[in-house]
Length: 181
Image (cartoon, one colour):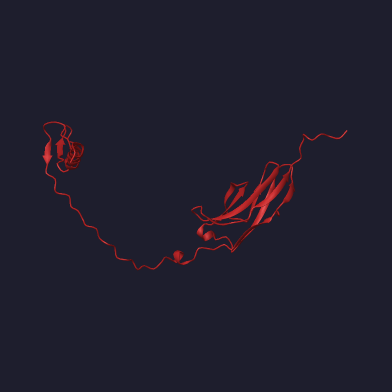
């Protein structure tokens, strides 16, 4: 063995054996408080003899034969259809305040017993979440083309079903438009 390997080995042995020889001390201060430590604070500390640590070997758990809870027996709802019913794809909406509503449908109906909810995204960003009704209203949306989609989510936020996106064109009157002469 080289000197380096031998030195590393000796250092490892010393570090690992230090916990074997750890001592515990007990003392009572002037106010009658009992204190325990691994280092004595002064000469009056009493050294304690600690029992060996008991260890337990690894055991294997027996397989459990339990009946599932009633809620676990029910299958998680499989949504077969989720679509935005209004407005239609490529629809033009004219509203100077930038307000509009959407409606959507889901089959089978939303399973609120398992805390399923709807989440609505506008241009890829979630803007409405934890909805249980099949409609949503928007206000003061900027003019332009927008993509809207709806998702069904479980209580932990996992997406169970997502609709195809619908594109809408929102027109708002502009005061910057020049008047004809």
